[in-house]
Image (cartoon, rainbow, N blue to C red):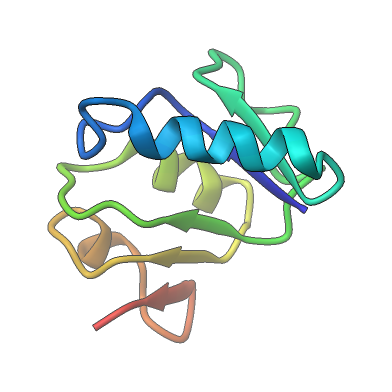
Length: 97
């Protein structure tokens, strides 16, 4: 199951991609769940997660990656500023080229 957590992405300014995800989740809630923005992610990390994925095209220093790493989750991220300094490719996770 994929659980998507967070606000609407600034990379999706018109919300089209988020609406597509919501529609997919409605069709098969056993495979995809959309949580949106939540204040306390502790119940989801690591109790309900095996891996953390951050597919951003740009970042600063993402707190979400820091929180996942603090919980001991391996992280899969894009190779952008902030995440590439945090994730040791092949050790603490995977940072795409």
